[in-house]
Image (cartoon, rainbow, N blue to C red):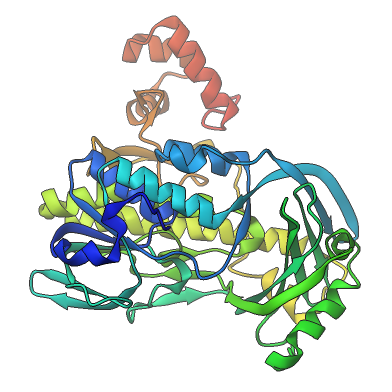
Length: 461
């Protein structure tokens, strides 16, 4: 995230960064979104981040792009490329109907850095060294300079999968490794592809300058990978058998070493404390197969400012804030894990291969979605976000919405469910909402339609 125009990022000028209210370790989408959210709440925020050690390209969907916009990023999204073709070959079938936007993560992170500085966030461009907990908070030393440590009253861990485990209990999925090899060919139109093979799956992308990114994902325990010297030949022999890989290999040559990265799904069982919080991949890292890495990172990061604000301003509600955050991290992790599980299960050609057998049964056998049962509706008190704080309010939970729904288009749902559960049989739901809650005919009609469409009311109602 270098920015030669920023004096603040000159390492020679870092000596005055010796105190901050909140320090965020990591400046990717999760760390950036949390920083912008905290700044909007009036906090002084310092972000410590280093540039990525190697080039990385990622494919993002329109939903991810919308999430980045909603997080407040502008400069980071100023020069994104157009969507490019994406081919998926799975279970013997090939689909080329989808597209994705191939982004250079270094450029995205650099743009996020500029957005943060534009908002008044202090950005220190260095690698985090030792982090020590002190009586008044934390002390963060730097790896690459002699600058004085930064002192933080509150610490946000946003260094992704590379974040130290800190001795916290973690749930791990099947141990997985992804091997990335760069290739160089002629300039071309950007494109990407994914294809399954007997021992794993491949993701390939071509950048406009001719750089090709070819990544193979394996099961750590059963892949029988050769030693480091033989990895390139091993991966190339697999790529040579994949039809989807041929356009990426044509007139191209591998360059440099293979980069090995863990891609094991990991859930931190304790993602928040009294004066610290883990966000993004540092809290939960999902299987890259889902293609939702940035989206899930933003999902936790957008909740974090309200949680932090509550811990700092309303310490009497600390337990409530922690409950709110951990429940959402757990819920999101299992949701994405089940998406991956179901996609792995759709590959039926190598049913007994350990790679596929372990992943189609993890994390559980619970369905991704359940059809809402009207009898499952309950009004309970749960933590929610209200004006930048975590508070307890009445919400409606269902068998498919265990975290509850508080409002729908500004309408509190708990009173709606109460009056409908107590109404006389001969009274229509719409009439009940009008007479008991004073809704206009238009609002009552629209809400009644939503209740039927989403399974909160049955035909008998």
